[in-house]
Amino acid sequence: MSVTYLHTAAAPKAIGPYSQATVAGGFVFTAGQIALDPATTEVVAGDVVAQAERVMQNLNAVLAEAGCAWKDVVKTTIFLADMGDFAKVNEVYSKYLGDTKPARSTVAVLTLPRNVRVEIECIAKLP
Image (cartoon, rainbow, N blue to C red):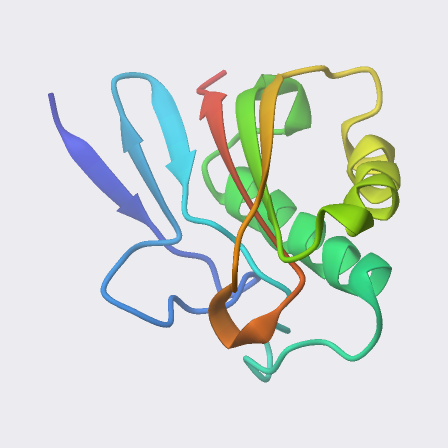
């Protein structure tokens, strides 16, 4: 099975030794996206809602680079610095996914890269 590494300038450049996404076995596996502005690689200003918006925009760009859309997503994982942010992040998440209902896990973690409030990763099937 071959593995292809994806990169798009429409999402933040990887800040470590990894790819924005890999394609293997008919699936796209994204790296976790945090609230980095792709142009500046700085964390966006604002609360968890602003961060979740940027995260979803970043994931949208990575999925598009793979030729996928939210309807192709089969699994997501959301990492929260505070489970108290669940409802606010869920509202943003729902706006992007619409009627798409992939399997999902949400976990609270001690810290996230760059001290952001939310990180999301996903797995999508290639269309």
